[in-house]
Amino acid sequence: LTFHYPGTEHGIDDVSFDIERGSFTVVTGRIGSGKTTLIRAILGLVATEHGERTWNGMLIEEPDRFFVPPHSAYTPQVPKLFSMSLRDNLLMGLGVSDEELVAAIETAVMGPDLAHMPAGLDTQVGPQGVRLSGGQVQRTAAARMLVRKPDLLVFDDLSSALDVDTEKRLWEGLLRDDPSITSLVVSHRHPALRRADQIIVMVGGRVESIGTLDDLLRTSPELQRLWVGEPNGNGNGNPAGS
Image (cartoon, rainbow, N blue to C red; front, side, top):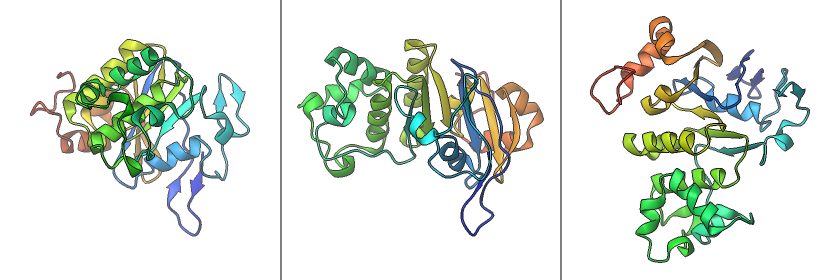
């Protein structure tokens, strides 16, 4: 895929990779490396100059129409919540049982927060979710994705407002509850990188390297810099930790 913002050289160039069903793929890189642009290009949210997307060998002609539930669910860097109840923000018209909704909330590590809300699922979150913390907004967005049970989950830096332990529990819960789910995650943080089956390292809008964490810590200068620069919550740089 190739895309450049109009009148600039900023964007992505000739990016190509495969994602296996049931895998956890992380796109990482510095600020401005093209991570979010890549996600938006894959999903058809920007008009790419050339390139194609395939799904189980099928060419996707209209990615913006295809990559929606039940095929895919996406949460951007700043999730949108609306001035209505937590329940309505999660469901957005979807008809599921409270049991299914609570299961998604638990997987998204929102359960303890919900237990401390006097109105529970009927809590009013306020305009753009102002009555929730940044981490609660992100976990609410994660639960909204999970309750739709898509084939592909796409998270753009979802964990930026989460502490390391909460993020770790979110990824663990996701993989435990549905090992067949496929995830595409933008992150530079250790919990996500440790979980990854495949890491795509972006530099200047291009793929610098693709591989596992152990391999890339040996072969990718860019990932080595990112890994050392990101606190891992253990005080060491050992990829096998926690």
